[in-house]
Length: 315
Image (cartoon, rainbow, N blue to C red; front, side, top):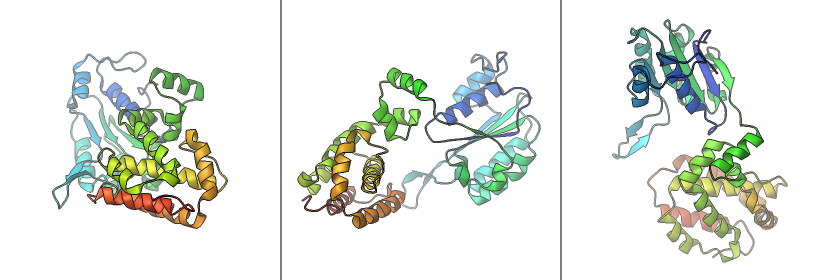
């Protein structure tokens, strides 16, 4: 798709995480800044502008995203919001003359990370940007955007590929439909899970959670604490609970279809009240997943509470 010609001043790419929206936005940005693009708008990859873009030094390009920041305890963590200071830097940036007297591009992602102050700081330039300036916003949850931001953007929804295309892509990348189900059908998210070792950890952990009568909470927590990142632990355990709750309520398994038989068997023994309370608390605990707690103790507590969902299970 070419972005030359009658281009909206603000584009919003909306859709689920892991379908290539950020990669598409970056490719479009590169195409717009290229000085010798092809007739269909593709970047040449050889001009000075393309080299600058690939090096992350193009003077007419700004990428507004979450930044790392230091906490009071001296830890470095990724911010949860795009700050008003960042937004004001973008406003100042688009007021400058372009370096190459061509286009200027501002990429904002994830756009839902704009807080009220930073969004309001951008409203004027989004509505009436300087000439030859293009804003590209990427959102995984566009309904969280302020209506005033949405109204100033041309929205393009990016969905999941069709199944035949998806299956061919899975084969080319050594993945299967189990990996796809794990990430709700998002292909790039499936690849990221594989590269991070998440799928392998999932297999090991779910094998243990399937056998509740032989579950040794202390020994398992000690083993997993040494190898499993906190965020991976939360992803695997929380998705397992959601699938278990779906089975208990007569629904279908979403994330772990290869464990459907085990989940159905466990669901018949699960105490619904306990399970609902556990799922609720685990959802809330997701906000603290990167907090420097005693992780082994957290895992032990989780496994013990998990055992209590069932009659006569666990140690």
